[in-house]
Image 1 (spheres, helix red, strand yellow):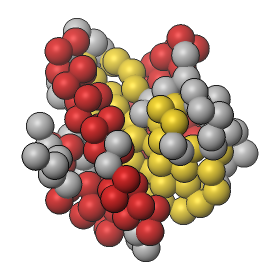
Image 2 (cartoon, rainbow, N blue to C red):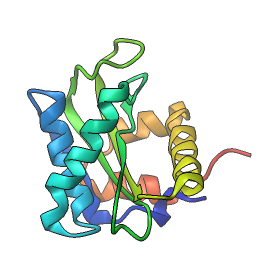
Image 3 (tube, rainbow, N blue to C red):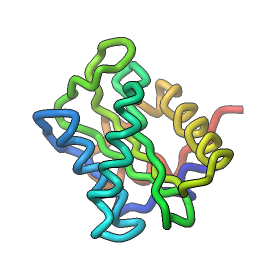
Length: 153
C-alpha cells in the first residue's frame, strides 16, 4: 500500500507553531476535512480527540499518528503536518512531536484502517524518511517525499 493513495498535496502542510496538542489536532482536522467536507472539521476533531483519550498516538522519535473514524467517509483520508517547533504530545518516549500524520477512515473499516496505520508507521520508522521530512523546504517538497516513498525491500 502506498501512502500517496490516501494523501493529496492540499492536505500537506509545514511550518506551523501550536501552543497545545488540541490546537494541532484542530489544524489536522481541518486538513482532513478537505478530503471529505470542510464542514466536517468539528466531527473529525471529535473523532481524533476521542481516540487520543484512549492513549496518545505519539509513537516516539517525534512522530504521532492521530487517527479516527467518521460515518459517511467512503475511503481512508490522510493529512500530514510538520511543525516548526516540536510540541509536547504525551508520546511514549516523552519526546516532543514535530511530524503528525492524521488518518481518517470509514466507520466500519477495520482491516483497511490497520493496513494504513501499519504503512504509515513503517514509513516513519525509516530514519532517512524522517530526516528528509524534517529538511523539506515547502509543502510541495513534503508531499513529493511522501508520494515517492517506497518501503525498503
